[in-house]
Length: 243
Image 1 (spheres, one colour):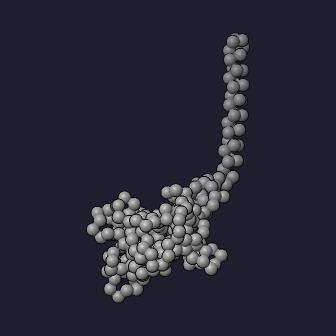
Image 2 (tube, rainbow, N blue to C red):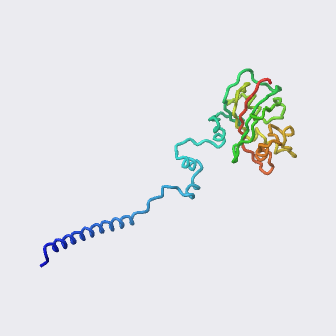
């Protein structure tokens, strides 16, 4: 017969081993159950899955707001600096919004117009093209003389006769417009030998000798014979009175 202390120790070891066996059995059963279930779907979309989504879904997924309003690239670019949303469009295709109402009397064809403008494109890594704002030399021409793109004259003189007529600008007013190609520089590409220089072709054209690169950006978008497609133009126009 074993001493009582040895007998107690053996009984403790026996109970401990039974407990370990039970724990091991539970672990093995859990592993077997997990192996039988299909793998969980990865919550992060792969590049292939994103490329297969329509563009609006990709934008919504990227922003994390599937219910967010998706706006067109032109409106998005135009609205960034000060939040203007160009939701007014005439039959001509010109989109516009007023940042500031002017005062006085509107200009008429045959009168001299003087404006400061900031020009940008709706495409490209550097959409900003040129501005006269800090140059001290506004752009001047006689309304209706054919020297300036139709989109600017339409923005200043306004239009009537449709449900989305454009009111004329008043001196001191600031208006943002998105000008489609047919109201922009498209006529330059129809010329046999375009000069692409201010005073030689329809304006406004950034000065060629300016060191800020504005002319080169303008030329790449709007006077490049290798790129027949012209993107829309975004213009901020400030109209002056008699100067």
